[in-house]
Length: 202
Image (cartoon, rainbow, N blue to C red):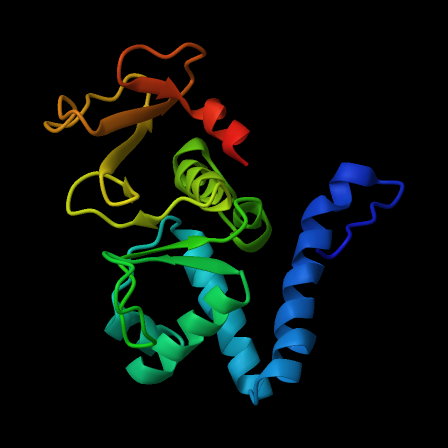
């Protein structure tokens, strides 16, 4: 892990320090491991920015390829490179048969803090919940895939719905293997659990 050293400004420099780590990975670490050009490095940064602007990001691969001026096959390779570099998490419908050409159903930043660093919009409660929860689940060693309903499928049998405390639950909320994770609550009730508790999984 790369250490972060704060200056006298402390927390004010945090976003800058994170940006420097991202640049270090793309500009120095990746060229050491892979034969990539400066143009590709710039496109990787552009791709990260686009993803950060609408996290969680549901990709239209053809449209995204046009946005960064590349082809669909090369874009798929770039998404794979960013995933291997631990800059993004590509959430797929299944963990079976994962390959470069296996399109992700949803893309999230690997570190939730990078939303504020990369995006001009900054973070808000809605766009930071899913990256945070996915980060905690994956670091706990759980298998997380994209379900046909709800937000996450854990270990192939637990549906996880993520919402605010006042949002109406879905029609599958009464299913036995269904859990609701809500922010802005301190105490859980039945199948609803507070979001902050997932932080203890790390």
